[in-house]
Image (cartoon, rainbow, N blue to C red; front, side, top):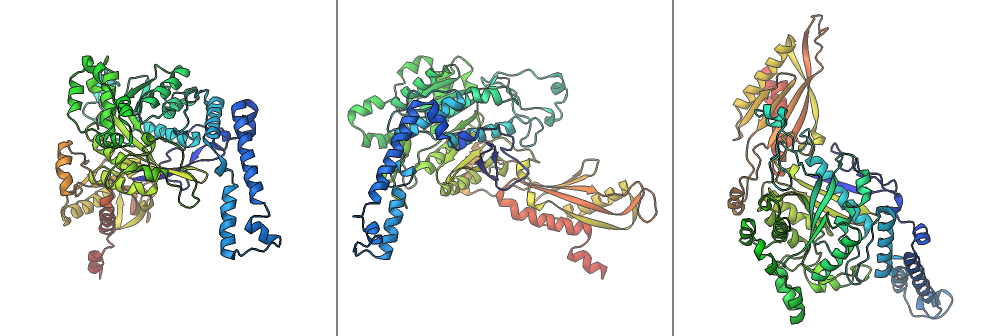
Length: 610
């Protein structure tokens, strides 16, 4: 599993603090520095609304600073000789508090954020956001932009035709599930699945935003002209389904979509809340509001098909309700096979209203303004974003062939632990679970993604990068190239045949200079998960561990010891691939034992040499 840190620097590129072999995000589009660090003066000269709010913010800041400098203040008064009983500790605490009170961020309000967001969207993305009601979440653009760039990186891997990340074939289909005619080369290569290429004949990527909010910011960003002009790789546009449980959010989101003339690319759907959300809404709203918030499915009865009937029988989860809406919206297609390349969500952070409204720990500033729909996802004993994503995981088991990537952006690093644990308990490969950090200044968010595609056995993500090593093997006498390879093969075969670790080791030689040992053991799964895994057609991939040994530095032309075409030593370079976290210790032991057996340096061979 890869953990990446994505940071939008002033040069606009998404980079990582620790360079690794898989440079996710290294090829992202160049972004103007003003998106990352907005130039307020430049924006104020063009957008009067933002200029007004910027002036108002500076006035509030100046007023607070003036009050803090009053001689009647005990800290200031003490510094100019006014008697005060204040202690040093109290003075230090009070000074720190007043410093925070005078800071820029303390005086940022909803109106300023909304004006800044609208100015950035118009200046760099040619998007307008006419409907952004007060009290609803105002999206920070750099943070949201980093998330969508990560989505693009994941899709780049998905459509990688060299099978560097996932096994090739996926069923050849478009988004509506229609079969795609294979090329002549593909028809002739049916015996070799690696010749198949994952293919979506649709002219766009199709994504799903679960909880699009009043702004509908993610679909708008990816559907903007900014990405159309810079996406030179795929030449594809973006197609979205946004879902919401709040009727007013859907109304505002639709106004924003209409204002940008993206009705053909972005579809919106009001979906029913999950049972936990329904219980919470019933407790926190009046009877009149409950009737307004109830989702009316009566208009869809005439369009119901077998897929919707089947979805009705599944447990209600965020994924389930979204897929049910998709089956209705795309009812003019083969909705039984309605497919999405990804889904994304910025889930509610908090489990209770009290947690969502309590002042921030440390500086005691107010929480970011947002509605209870946006901020609270109830659960007992676990709620908030952890419960939301866990429900997504359970729903994704039923839709693993309908959505390629399931993703979420988290507000707490601690939330990653139970979510990763749940995904690993299902037997998902390290290559199928991704996580990253989104860094803007002092603010950090965390991304988690998973897929049920089978990873390529030599997936770049499964490569143990810090364990690539080499060692020398010396022979008793000079050997020809084929003789050296045969001798190495015999040693590996003997090792595999006498393996006592309770697993099946498979050795094969590709006919060139690569020798491979594969460990075919299955990872251990909790008893509570075995039934679930079995019903999902074996999520666990068959290959767990793989060690490639590349035979190098053979002086075949000139030979050693004066014998042309022969060598008495070779260098073997190892590349180790581990697909499951639980097998990391196993592959380290296997590598060490295999190295000692081939080079004749382990204890058994050292004893014989004495």
